[in-house]
Image (cartoon, rainbow, N blue to C red; front, top):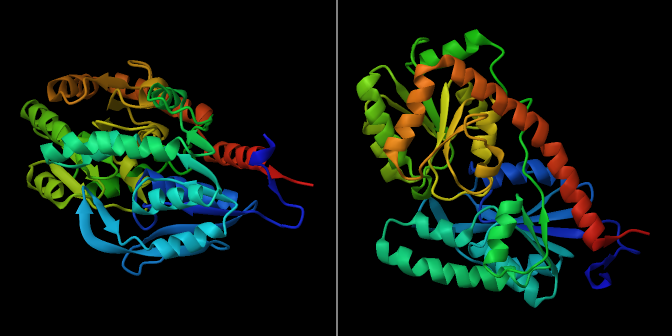
Length: 394
């Protein structure tokens, strides 16, 4: 399709504007993705990142330009909304050959809208099913009722006008197609740094961290890491933990992450729960866990589950997004009924009672990640996609 080709006869590198409402130092799946792929893309593109300004904390990447948007005091779920600076965003978008968006919040959505108006090539990476995420992020029922159809309509409007959608799995591609989004789609799986997220090769270091957390060597630790948000449904995890602790008083629950303060306070008040705010070295805390749980109501890939599996942890998860495709029940993980704390407790109980099952599922989980998910492969496929689809070299 020649109309999608950028002529680079007199241009050394094309300009790619990456727009995201999430960026470092915030810790989540989107920021993890960007921190991995931007260094791999910058050799082929001059990159400009439009992202939030987190109160003057600037994370820089060599060779990458940043356009930062100040944050307001308004908060939705665990997101602090930016003060949208349209002129700033338009100025950056005008320089772009390709606009690559990660979100449909005020920054990502605005950049995508103006890029389409300015007839730039636009690609959106689908990290979330936006209408599900927005509806689950609020605790107000009337907001849930109206946010779902409104967000769905806005999402359809913007995505249907994109040059391409990049999706992390075939199942997510199918969801979008079923919602009548006929935009061309490219499937590129996310990856994991398997050299970083691996079983501990230093048992003394693991014991030392557990000791600092107040955990004895003979105690089992159930864990979760990621954003503390309503759509993660940590209430179901806490209810299951309380049930299990009645039978296993020494059981611990380790939650690593930051987000909604109300939920954080509930976690910290519960006996046996250890809450650690978001950290940059989360792999150490995964190595301190014995069982990993994901109770999310909505996901696409779930990098947190991939990282836990790479660490050889047995995973108990809800059947959400791509997770239901790469986990096989009883082989490399276990499923429970979404939102059902009794179902979750039942599956965790199997792992508590059987070290052999924990080791089997954890070993198979690690094998799955090593052979199917890798950041170098993700980066290579993404670069190839942009080059082959939009760029004509001479």
